[in-house]
Structure formats: structure tokens, C-alpha cells
Length: 339
Image (cartoon, rainbow, N blue to C red; front, side, top):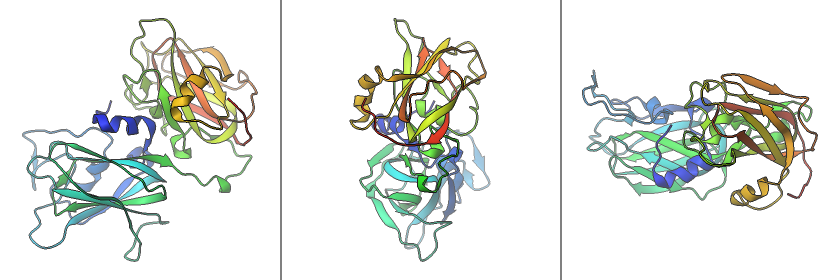
């Protein structure tokens, strides 16, 4: 489970880290990464500090660190986002960098096919901010354009442990075949976790990630429920559609998988993420209550109710426990439906 600064928790729960390697993000260039490899900047794991670990260039640090600059200018690196998207906030994390962090940083962005070149136009989306050592620096981004690459500038040199880029994946749905069956909830198709009754051991966005879960930490798990009721998570689909196949994967969850699950859904046409929570109690049933088993992929097709196009679902797990992945396959489609 990642440890977030309090001010980052809301963004992390609501949006996707567009700089996550599991989405295909990569640090493609750095002016200098003598002390610490640029690839570590977007490592999905929390940064660590090992007191007695050294390599040929000096103290090993978990992040990106340039050497001490002895001339004019400043260092920068370029991050290719896993998928183009709208950026809502960034977290410039200097954890464990105390005497070697940059005094300031800024971020530029561009949207290009392929990789940026010398002719690429960059737009500043995060003006220079003062940094502190061993700290998270969470900055909201007002620009709502779609970006494919970021340039992190550090003034003049030093080390940054992690860069998190919280935003919304933007898909070009106009190019999709209307008859294609796609996972409408996948992170790579713009799906995102909106809210959950409990996120003690993970965010619901984890269950939309590519591939199968790598361990119990790579999913959504609630605390042990000690009161009546059940836990739930609300998922926003990347595009409205008619769902024809559902996969609920409990990989790695053996003594803590939910006993049963059900799914409600609706085509939401207004309101906010917060207003979805009370509305979701009254959404139509998409998948009636189904029995689950440990460490297993559960496929449902004939059990699915025909309720037309939807763009939000509520996954109910009964009474509590952990889910590794949720797949909602169907054809894209639209329409209006009041919730």
C-alpha cells in the first residue's frame, strides 16, 4: 500500500497516476542521472532509504539524482506518460533527500506523437515551486488540456525521489469500432475508481489496472467489517456502453476474499462524484448476487441483466474482503438515463 501525504490522498484516490510504469510510462531522458537512475523517479513502490548502500558513484538513493552542477543552467528529465491525459495534480516527492534536494522545481508539458524534439513547444503547467527536503509537494494543475509528456525541471540540480502525476486518461473513442468488445472499466480506457466504503488496504482504481494482480497489495481490500451491511466501490467507465461480460478476479485473496458480490449500474447525466454515493444505492441491478471463491477468476455472462447503456457501476462485496481485478466488457454506446 502506498503512503501518501494527506494532501495527496484525495487526488490519489480519485485519479490515475498517469506516470505509472504499469500503464507504460517511462523516463525517456535526463540531462544527468549520475547518482541515481532516472527510471527510479516513477517507480510504483514507495521510496526507501538504505543507510549502508553505496554503488560506484556514491551513496545509493531511491529516486533520480544528478551530480552537483558547476556551471550555469539546471537539470531536467522527460517523462512519457503511460497514456495521454488531463493532469489534475502532481506530487514532487523528495523523501529521503535531505542535503541533496533541489531548492525549486517546475513542470512543462506537451502533446506529441512519438517523442519530443528540439522543435517541440512546451507549456508550463506547474510554475516554479520551492522544495523542502524529505517532503511531498502536491500542486493542483488548472490546465485541462491533454498531455503526453512532462518535463520536470530542477533548479539547479539534486535529487527527487518520486513524481506522481494524477489525472484522467483521455481515449480517442471516435476511432473505435462500435462493434468492438472492450473493457469499458480499464484504466487504459479511461476507467477510474470514484469512491469506496473503505480503502484500508488499497484503492478501487487498482482493480482496473492492466494484467492480473501481482500480490494482495495490488488490488482493493477493505478492513474486517464489524457492523451490519457490506462494502462497495463506485467505478466510472471510460465510455458509456452496454456490458455483456463481467470478470471478478480474487487472485491472491485466499482467507480474505468476499463471500459474494453484486453489481449495480446507471447512466449518470449530472451531479458530482460525491453525489454518486447516495444515488448509487438505488441504481438498477446489472449483476445479481453471485458466490465467489478464493484466488480465482469468476466469469459472468448469462447472469447479467439487460439494463441498457451505463457509465457508472457500483461493485458490492458481501460482506467485506479483497478483489484483485474487475473487468467490464461491452460495446460502446450512449443515451440518457436519469438516476
